[in-house]
Image 1 (tube, one colour):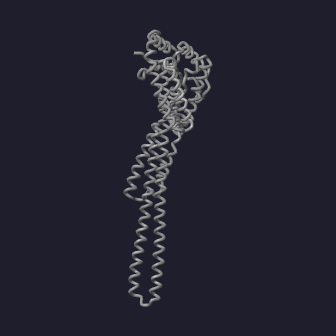
Image 2: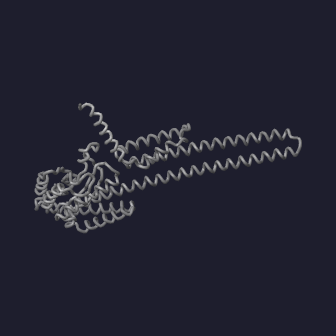
Image 3: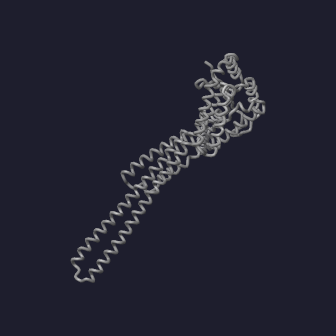
Length: 405
């Protein structure tokens, strides 16, 4: 009696998988490239156009693969490059047709001239000669005008293709600069958090304040869409933060020896590991140690309101970080991949802010915490299964401290 139910189960799994894939919108650059490839003009045989189309097809296929691998930037870049090559092929085919028509018209002009020469020999009367000559002149003028119109049309198509290539290049450059600005902000924030692990607000206050102010200005420039200005300010902020770290480290390490910082760090790790229902991991980047608390089950599916069970977990986390008030904290929320990337980033940021205010309301100093929403980035499990999506929907609280040699 149970055997006939197996196909139904398979169909349900396939429907769920198809729904998961459908929820993920394809980038407009890739859709435009695929529609452009259906232009009937591109079916005409031409060796140079064929080579361009082959390269365009490779780029579109590569963009498809990158999109499947969640590389949105690479997919958009290769789809845009594929559009450039297909539009260049269209311009090339159009140019070939116009050249053929110009050649045909040139041939008709040559025939007309031969006919005029033959008629000149046959016509006996001046009236017939004048009539035939006028006919030849009319045909020549019409052919010349049509030839000029075709040349103008070809030149317009060539200029339009060049303009579109320039626009696509500028769009790619803008996207690249925005990505560089985001990377610069994160690097500057990491440098500032690293500086705080050696207590730069105390031992290198001027440089730490300058780095903080410069990073705030970089965020303002980024929000205003001034990518270049944001990159410049993140570079300055990172330099000030690294300078503050170098200046404060000797004094901090000396004080750390007195305060037995290493023993305190080990105690923190032991206390964090003992928290029930919370996973921990240690990450080291050069001389920066990150103790990451991975907390799941805080929110309902794609919700941003803390559940009662999640509040109890945060009570335990609050007790831990409250016992170690000198450690700076990084708070990041993640989601599964079910939805649009921009919506998932917004959802993760709302979840991170909910945890942030929950900790602040419990007495944690808000200046200790930085907040980030990263959407479906950095998955830790397969999003194709409910269990994997549940693991990916998580909040990570990183406790930062300096490792003294």
